[in-house]
Amino acid sequence: MYTSIKKYCDSLVLEFETIPQERKISLSKISEYIKVKLSDKEPVSLTYICTHNSRRSHFGQIWAAVASNYYAISNVHSFSGGTESTEFNNNAIEALKRVGFKTKALGTDKNAIQLVSYDDGENALECFSKVYDHPKNPQDKFAAIMTCSEAEQNCPFIPNVELRIATTYDDPKLFDGTDLCEEKYDERCRQIALETLYVFSKI
Image 1 (tube, one colour):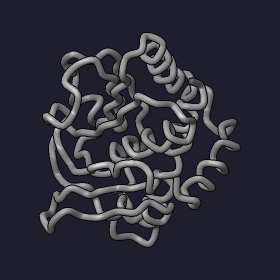
Image 2: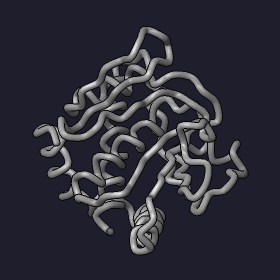
Image 3: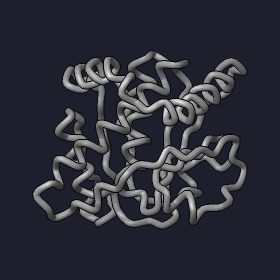
């Protein structure tokens, strides 16, 4: 794992007490799901879902991959999707870069695949905006983690899901084009990282 990301995680694991108890109850349900799947020697598939699959769901997918690596938990696979497809927002990408991730766009298309790396020894994550049931995502036996309230409300039914849970986050999009943009994206990235590390710390 890149040194800057490792240090970032090391600092966050000292802050688990800042997570509100009601959040911990929801997050622990994800931990329990992962533990049961692993105890049954089954692969774990986690799909993070928000409306546009442009910001928070990508943070969830990426930090789940990092957290499983940080805690040396194998056979966990993370994905993301939306109720519609847009693009992996550049402000979110820049927030990840500030943490220490390396990114590379495959092409110049608005919704080009972004290769996101957190470790030279691991395959880069392929991130792009897509609907939650896109062929690249699991079609059954997965957990759906709803990262925004709009997707939670507009997606009343997700086929073949084993666990559906809402861990919604405020949208940094509200600060696009403002002086607070960078701060709010960093804040959301850090919150999702903190809570995802908490999930994996319980396994």
